[in-house]
Image (tube, rainbow, N blue to C red; front, top):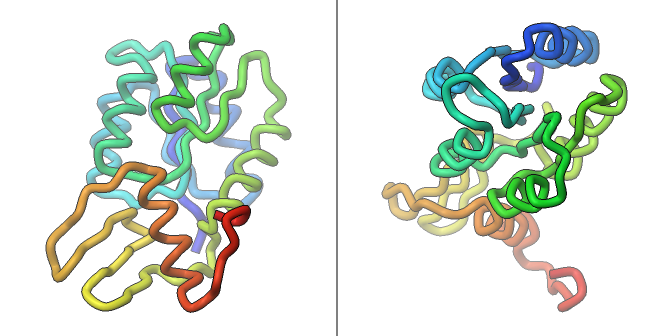
Length: 177
């Protein structure tokens, strides 16, 4: 089963180029030219990683990132012409995992997508859910439930909980944590 990558960029040539490069590496790509269509896609399609532009016609990429982070915890790469330090810092504060300025190398983008998916543990052979007691952590849906009730966690909280649940019974040093 291929990883699902969401690509949102209003520059059709760039979005199409990114789609081709990612598809050539075996990823399934859901490409959109605006935020509204991308948000609709997220309601029905499990996504492994998103590549977002900041300057979109209907909503800026920061607002889109904020909306995504309200429900989902998959990695996000900002791919944008806005390369100022303040823009990058704003992106990282919102939970962006990588910030790439245009012009960019499509091959480097694909390599970073692969590296982020490997680092975040979202690989094709990953187990979909981890459970312990009444806690169920569904990595594919990026959702946590406790005794059947959904719990909203920040991106970092979700990642920490996943790490601890996957490493239960193992003593971890302060440096590792």
